[in-house]
Length: 352
Picture 1 (cartoon, rainbow, N blue to C red):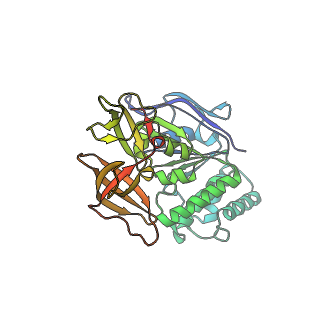
Picture 2 (cartoon, helix red, strand yellow; picture 1 turned 135 degrees about the vertical axis):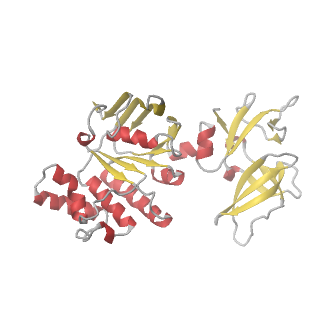
């Protein structure tokens, strides 16, 4: 059975001064795949350790379902843990590694053997039980670590950057496998990562953390399309974050250096907005009088699309614009004069 997790004003202070986690409020629903996302030092791993029981909060509460587990030791929380470095016993077989938690619970040998076989089949390692970790690839070792975590049938699975040591292709494969396994088991999963693409691809919801606080909680689509703060807009994908104001003496709008831009829907006075590059229409300026004009400074070919960095005409301001690549049509080149335009609804007003 899965269980929900609630953090209520959870705070962790180290050395009497460093607030690694600062009054965090999060509710993770039963069966949900929930990611803690943020840069190094933001507090995501400490938050996970508070949930696991490896750290005790300086203040606040942690609930498993309706049960207060704030002071409950880690081994009594009924949670499985997967680490980035696998943490396997090198001189024990795969079967012995996976069986470790079951043996600690005093389960009989026949039941241990049955459960170990079940867990290894779940992670596509049936028949690998007699091998040692050094006889396995990195992805296989990570599957062993995952099998060891789920074999005890925990209510919650905690993952601390479990795919960070894998190369990109294997990492993507393991993302699919882990998400499918979690969905099939209906297991509440808390996943720590600094990789935005990974969190967006795998999560039902995620919390973006910064400096010990939660900046925003939402679905991947909500976080990407409607960031609430400058930090979230900057951290998740590419974004043009612009300080804008009404143009003096007119009904128009301008950037802080005076460059005219299209109107901002809902803007009142000076404001900060985010604009995703793929929302910017970019095309050669020849014959176009509308839009914001500029010159392409750099070109990043991405395969299916091209990302352009454009210096605005008569300004030091630069904008990113991304355009899909049409078959048989080469991307524009550095030095091309272009016109940029976007819809008012593509601008997202941010909190400072």
